[in-house]
Image 1: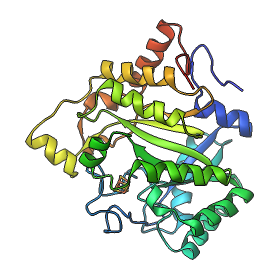
Image 2: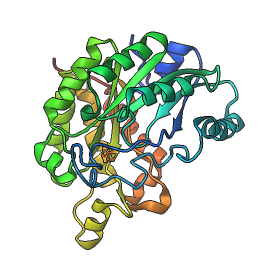
Image 3: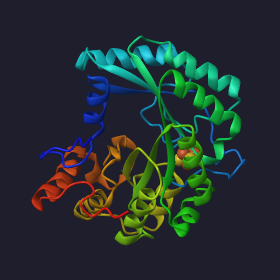
Length: 310
Ligand code: SF4
């Protein structure tokens, strides 16, 4: 079923949740105090060059607090704005399947039991932090709740992968998607636009690759250059080309046009804490970014998948 409208000519997450659950659904970021195989040496050291100290979970809960206290804090803020929503517990920071199965089960179960309005789990991870035992655990949760696994890819470009120190292959990612789908688990993929090594065509190629896989959702991020990251230090020392707002909107609109029309778009840009962002500063005006993309699509009477080819 298409969720597209004249105003939003692509499948938005909001419309998807409303259609599926009949209400607005909020993702509540919890912090399970995980680390990452790309930091502790299992796959790499030092992490991805753009990764913040908080493991790219800058809006996640405070890892020092128990999950129930993290949830209570965020829920209070939510209730001020919206008191009739449902929640998905979102394990966002670092790699949230990277631990013993016993601890993973405990954390996921605890998260689901925090409130009767929590209707599912969203778990952010990497392909190198999944194995048969963990797939089985995820499969078990997929049977009893609504489950999304968010997998980081960022780009299919090998040069980019080396530059960002991603430390896993494209094959590892593709295999993980296949294993998850074999168990009927929803897969949401993160990609990043704006690596200076990449042309517009390279960024479109990443979406073309995803079209070949069986994925259910996509998060399109803008590359944020943040303070206290390797990328940030690199940029401050020797600034490189970053995307303008117009370029980002143009690339992202073109990606939407080639994207499989059945995929749900969870994000069209990213959030960065104002105080840590070095560039691009135009990204702080998130609604302006989204409007630019929508305007381009509406202006040419276009929509998600209009240029999709199998
Ligand atoms: S995979 Fe995520 S948490 Fe790990 S280093 Fe990269 S950005 Fe950071």
